[in-house]
Structure formats: structure tokens, C-alpha cells
Length: 325
Image (tube, rainbow, N blue to C red; front, side, top):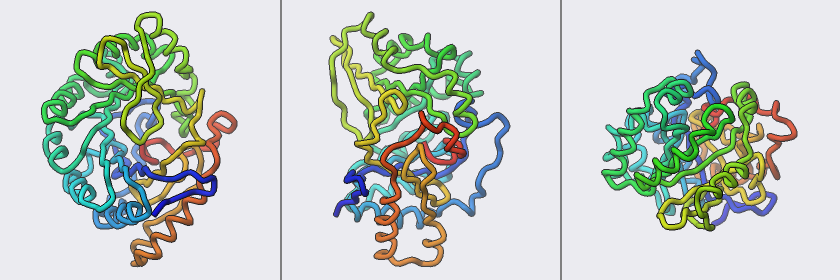
């Protein structure tokens, strides 16, 4: 079966938030002092999550990414991962993390069926890292090395580029990823909630970053497996691939293949829009599998043609951590 929206886009990819909590405080994602978390009883249980993901896989979704907040703060996450990895039709189960707790979980996640990971890392300068996240860089490095040691591959480093904050760290991050055989992906800042609208002051068009890299490295077009929207190049003479994710300067809405499910069971059809559908009340009222499948089909038709980050940056009031990365 296929899950097709009203604009004839096939939905194959679900980003599943398992928590809205995080053990870092990146200033562009979560306000300083923020504590308005959902209570755990409001989160979907593992049984409820499995029911929803089973429905999506019946409808043709083949890729699921576990996100948060920070997913590794959700207790027993490897148990959930193992249950999801066993679902018929699910071909790709991955994880996005800040890697602060990855060192102690890398082996169990790999054994549970996580095939690959993305790690948010905006600088390899410990002082800047502390300023951006209020965390310690050495914990992230420890987690990355543990993930590499247990065989998680590929490991993709996601770097949000911010003018005057970390844009001078681009070459250092290239060298770091090349040295450790990680894939590097640059991401444009997005105006999500009040923090995101503040961060838009730091926005840089990634075309400028690519042009800068072309002056130092010979780059050729490349491809890389994955369900996301990154466009890749490769540094000639190395195995290093660099991706560019450009939701603002060159949006990819016409080929968008993904939706997001929050920790509380809200299905978001677009990161840059408020169209949503609450699944938790239906699950807790014992909706049948057939009816759940139909609800998801109906919800997909709420997916807009494109986001309006540029035209209406004030439109999104929720924070990224509440939506799912």
C-alpha cells in the first residue's frame, strides 16, 4: 500500500519523537530556563507507539527515525527500538541524538536494530559548545567514538550554521569528520517558535558556505542512502561526504516524503505549519486498526503544499523540541 497526499507525494518516512525533554539547552531550539514539559503520562506508551508505527508501515512507510527532545532520556529506549525494528515493512530504523548519553547506550541500540545515527554537533570548540548548548563537548566525543566502535554506520554530524556563532568553524568540522570517517551535514537555521525567530538573525544561506568550501576543496556531486532531504557532495581524494539541508534558501517541499509524530501523539504534517492531528485520544479509546489506518490517510491530506517560513515566520508557535527534530 502507499500513503499519498493530495499533492501526489508519497509518504515513506516518519520522524518519531519519544520525548520533549532534553539534557542540553541549545539557544536556537529551547528557551533558557524552559521547563514546560509534557508529563510522562501524557506521552504515548511503547504499546501505543508500536500500534501507530505498525499502522504507518502497513500504509507503506519504510523509514522511521527516533527523535526528541533528546531520545536517550526516554527510559528503556533500546526496548522500544527492538520492538519497532521487528515490524514487517520497516526497512530503516535510525536515531537522532545529541550523543551526551550515547556512550552507555551505543551497543544496546545497535543490537536492538538501530542501523545508523545522526548527531547534532555545531562546533568542535569546547568553549563555543558550552556557550551554544550549556553542555560538555567531551561527552559528545565519547559518545561518537563509542558509536563508531560498535559498528553504527553511517554516523552523520548535523551542524546548524549560525552567522557570528560558529560559521568560522566550518573547516574545522570538515577536518574533524574526515579524520573520524563521519559524514558532515550543514543545516540552515529555521524560525521555529520564539527561539527560532531570534535565531533567524544568525541565518546564513548555505550556498555561501558551499562556495567557500569550493575554494579550499575539490567537490564533486555525491549520493548517500537515507530518507531525508540533504544534497551531497564529496571531497575529492577522500571518502568524506558533505550534505546541505536548505529549508529556507532552497526548500524541498515538492518532494517532501515525511511527517512527524510528537511524544504526546500529535501528528504534524509539516515542520513549518500548524496542521496536525491528535492520535492519542483515539488510541486510548481503543480505535480499531482499520480505523486507525483510515485516520492516518485522512490526516495526510492535511499536509500543505509548502511551508511558509519565509512568508510567515510568526506562524509556528511551538518549539522544535516539542515537535520532534
